[in-house]
Image (cartoon, rainbow, N blue to C red; front, top):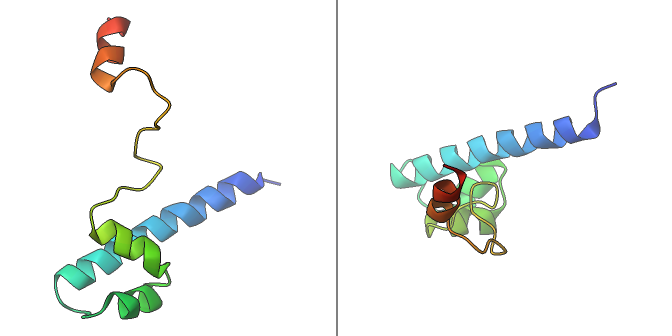
Length: 78
């Protein structure tokens, strides 16, 4: 039986896709309200509002605990 983690990661990938579709629908004015888009695409309204303000998701953002920037890390690896 596959681990539960793969199912939750699959759900998060699906939810990310639905969020992107909702953002696209709002920007193209197919749907006029954020609340309606969240309901139609079955995504959290707060998440959708944050994404529309330009806040990236945690999976792609860099954690605060890093002491070096990405460029500094890359220069040390070479």
